[in-house]
Image 1 (cartoon, rainbow, N blue to C red):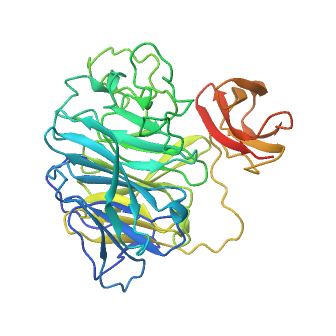
Image 2 (spheres, rainbow, N blue to C red):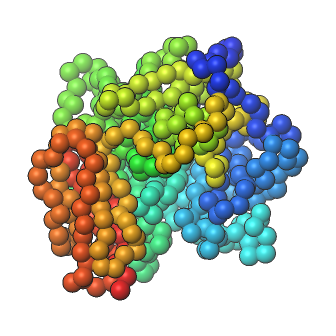
Length: 473
């Protein structure tokens, strides 16, 4: 995220039903950088205050105060884009009480990724002394810290690192795989080798390389992904990458892909400005220019599956920190459609969803949280998102001895679906052929294999995916 003068604009909606309302009129927070729910079945929201505090409160419009869940202000280097930036609750938070944070420290200036635990006696209080530092990454400049951490549907922890800052990536971190800067990182916090603070997933793209590349890297060539999120139904990873001089962009992040920075800014050559080599680069699915109709600093959001704004169902809702524009992006017959739904005077620093999928955003300048509502959802049955390239979680999981693995192809592609054991050895190929666009189901039989964690991977002409599954006998 970058900080530039804010333009005050009038609110306009493209739908008469969509509206913005103040979610918690009695609450305001200092420099909001994140809104999260813990996924533990409680009706609570957690808010990060960038100087170093996390607040918790009941998700009730009439709530009058928030409790301080964690205060690490004395540790945090706050200023500009530095501070307490990210919060992720472990998928089993209800049982283990573990959560993870991303913040900036000084002397030397660095990003810190830590694990902490909630109090056994009070669910609204964390234990600061429980902090275990997982990784520290030195930051050469004060900007482009990235900051998001979140667990993917595969159970791994994803972390966005900016390119290290300044302007134009002077140290070329985006294309340097020997540093974590300019990349999306993926680590395993549950299966930790002795002497380490975290594990490396077997299918990370540079595991076992002999070139000095960081094995934690999942994808690279990113400038400053200030916000990313996973589609709750498809598992796709949407990343909003803040641009340099001219273009803001949205990408779908996939294993091992190079997203082009600093060779390109969006779909345009940056260094060099003309005739850049685009071989092997993954281009964004959408970009917008630096103008009042577009914006100057993208703030990523969420794919909406709540019940109080049917107009947004299945659409990726995001905004801009400077212009206050809010858009809804979606696929229509394989083509990306982008609609501006609001033009506000808010400095939108983050979006968030609650346990029910309702959508919120925060205004950095006034410390308020707002909710987007529209036509209530009245249909029954599950939501069917647009057909995309995707690999679904196997079902059932855990299983014994058979399970179904399903995937979809947005268009014709060669598809290879393989199963690997915990050592990374391939043990089965379920399909290896060209398939038309559509949805497909395949059954894997683990009758001749022992209990344990297995990985299945889908390779297509356009995307690669992988997930874990558990065989229990």
